[in-house]
Length: 609
Image 1 (cartoon, rainbow, N blue to C red):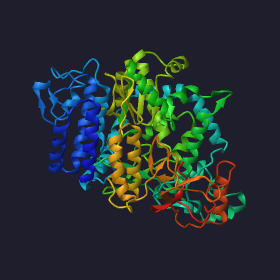
Image 2: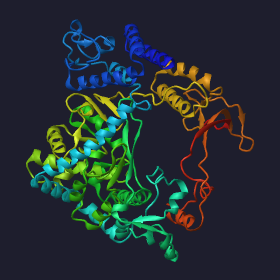
Image 3: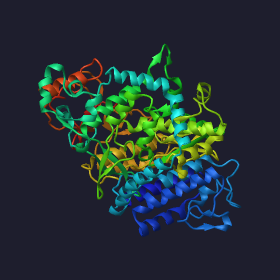
Image 4: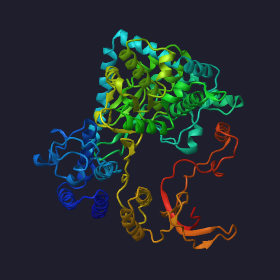
């Protein structure tokens, strides 16, 4: 904690100089509250201040209900005493109203100070973890209530709008599934049945539901010549299927993220359907995307359009950014069935690859009303299509007309969905929010913006067109070199701060890192060496023996996949499932595979670029 406080003190002082203010009292307050509250002040209390600050920017003034954990003074317009030097550059000290021309540097500085430790990877307390799990189960009950409360007209609107949006897209996917053009693949993550690496290619079970759409002979055996191996495959009836395994992973110290590990067979088939979705969405007709409107409105692997639209929204006010809480957990299976009702093969594929039960810690095995939790390969694209349908229902209700292709095209540059990050025109935002709520989604008001000039989407934040995004600490600082993940994280933190122009803070981190890593050279961003990036040139220590290229001495991240030998039908299947015509990058992939059990750093000579 001493290193983290010293680091924060250097950062606050540098930001204060940049904003022409003093932070002496602020640092005294930070030190006192850390001594009293501990790490939670940095990871919970300060981030709450930051969120209230963003809410004040959006509504245009500091209201009495914000900043409850910090003392406020009427003599300075009801502004908090903490960080008041920065706040006075943004809000009026007379009435707390947003200045007509607030200091953008001060806006970014307040966010940087308060949200610096908001995403640090630390385990939550047992009580907070149990609460998150309990909310996961409660969400299931709420979802069932929502499904039952939807009126016949709501469901009809949902079906009609989904047909208007996806009829060509889904028809193409439906045809590809009918023709057997789905090529499954294994994902990199863990699974509920604990199969990892090459063991996944020795998959010895399948489900009856999968068999109806993706026959085992064509999907888990390399060719028809292995048909006798079907006797070794166990086919599971619906009641015997392996449930997803619900686990928690670090998100913030306030609450963990709840995800679900899918069984290997389900994950395997889901990845194939996901690839089909992506291929059809990206398919071009000549020089244009065949499904241009959907390609523009649904993001799956490209966040930049969302970020650009958020910047435009902050400048013009014409676009709103919405964020959803528990987004994937609030998409019901009933909604997905209605979404794909007119495409039987697609509907069967989504149902076959969906896990129906979950093993929840402390609650046993429960039946799921949601379509899928985070962890399913199909969760992300399907939830995006469901949300886009809800958005256009909201647009319909705002315009009081049924949508057609002309109306859809008119919104293709104004609506964008990337997971739970949604962008819509400001003038329809209230109708969209009402519609999302009607169908069971929960809009996160603390991270949704449409009133002022602040916008946030896909990890980037903007105010009045200016990028006010910040750098965040992801792990606590290392004290020894064997704390490999912490070493990697702090070097990344230092380099991000350097390119953000916070050079004094980066220099302070250089000293801390140098005391842990004895060799810490200047390198280019593309170098494999853990080093400090700089506009100044690197200093080569020697030349390569054969290539005569410059080398520097430093620590290089290395990892070794666990031993996992694969032969016979599993090896042939892995070869046949490989994408692209190039050889495998790792020549030992049949001997070692899977995520490494540990990551190491080794001192050696390596390229600085």
